[in-house]
Length: 433
Image: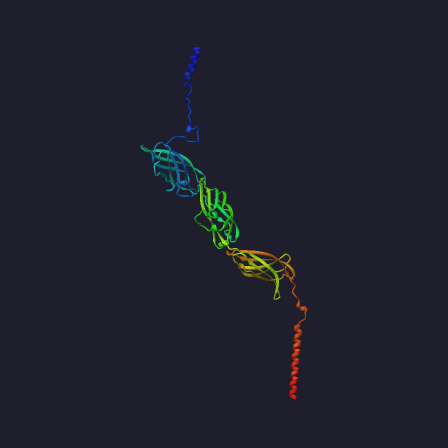
């Protein structure tokens, strides 16, 4: 029994000489190649982006002298000073001093233990750089307080070319009409190269807001807007979204420009909430509201004419008015036009268009269309049509009746001849006696 135990102990003692030593190690502070870096040091990388420490900015290919900020944390136990940074970016990015120059940055202050600090570099971007993610490396040289020598830290990171978002607004139809309700369509376009999301639009300084504002910056409080808030959502680059509103404009704003301020909030490509203000302008036209009435046929100087009246119940005169009578159906009346000039407000304007026929006259009922053509204050031409049925009478035929002229003239000549003969006879008797 004892020899067996001794043999086993002997074998165990020889094993370290037969087999190599085996160790376990956690790489990079985790299990295997962990994506979470757990190395300890004085400086830890936090973020890298285009912009300043106070605000991220949107950039695109071709931009020059753009600020690029790298943020670090002093995770050591001592304050550091003499902070100096150097930036390495891929092809297409260069220092603002020109191609081939090293991209340097200096921090303006020390960094206390446990505090953050940043380095802002200035970079030129080639116009051919695409909107995507790129790798970069930052080198930081610094010194600990109460310690001689310079320490160096390196940070590899990714950054993104976001593109620009350019928001514009415009009215699809820039004219409103007073004394009526207008359906308004406003185009919100992203003319940039970066998408925007969560777009929300509010019409500001409206009647609902006037109570909470000390003064009005526009005349929008004088109109009635039934909708004042629109959830637009995402607007991709080079695309547009549309919002609609119902606006009532009173008579007193005729000839004015209505300015509607819009407050637009959205999220930019960095994920930051932004808010901008835009103004949509409308020109307010007067209302021209025409009605055609009292259409009939009368005879003037032996010519039958279509007559009627036009009333303007709006608040703006119609300019350069024309009235055209055209046949409908089987009517053979020839189209004819009359110039009536201005169509004034609240004053009936008469028209009379002579009736002519294409071929043999047809008497009785005729279906016609009366078209009133005029221009408004913006010189846009407008057409108003009115369908009517008229009755054309057959004219009286005077050739079948007696011609009193042929009777009266001979009688007058006979009377005159008789008087002349009688007077000659009286004169002859007087001379004979």
